[in-house]
Length: 201
Image (cartoon, rainbow, N blue to C red):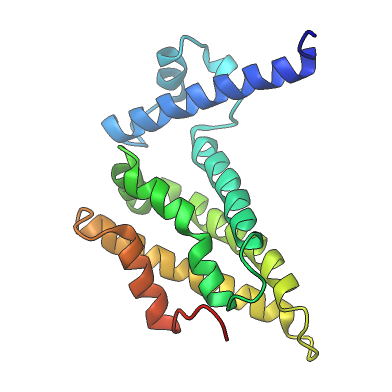
């Protein structure tokens, strides 16, 4: 049976988007974010500037879209953790996929350094954290819903925010020492500095 046209169109769109994102990231790493233009990104993939804007609103949006997709993956990973796990430990384990991706990706260290050190990406970075905090807090709130004092939401936001601050601290250290220590170990150190990482209460 033939593939539905809508499904095929969507897959084609996703493939082009992924190709543009990969080209953009390579150019960002090679020549700097601020020095890279939309025209250059489009040209590498054989597209026009107008075609680029069918997939991304701006070059900042390339980073922003990755952030949205990663936030959804983090929330799904947290939701999949056993309900009896301590919430703080479950958050740490929810970071495993991202930590592995960053720790093994060929351009990850350089992209992370660029993201942390480029002023033009500061707003994107803050938006990413706010989004990740909210989607993680949504999952955590369900975990903490048994609280009868009405503190489940504020506790969920506080825990998610603290975990992401710990992740940021680990990434900053990882970049500053050129990945001398495994990223996972740095995340463990950062989160343990806030609260013990224990599997259950």
